[in-house]
Image (cartoon, rainbow, N blue to C red; front, side):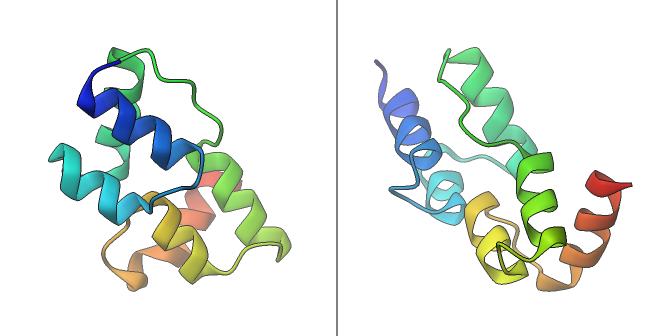
Length: 86
């Protein structure tokens, strides 16, 4: 496994945050993290829609979802949840 794949795998296992995964891989967004995961054949254990649904149903706080995905601006979270749960 490459260094990037190792970082992405650790992120998908919940060992590091999305912020840390973005920093280590140079990913510009959570979407780019998923693109890198696909390119490096890393198993995806959670997807943006999964995170949004968990926030929507209250099993995850918006702050936890923001950290998982590495979303920088908390103000984006309401529209993120709305877009993925509509």
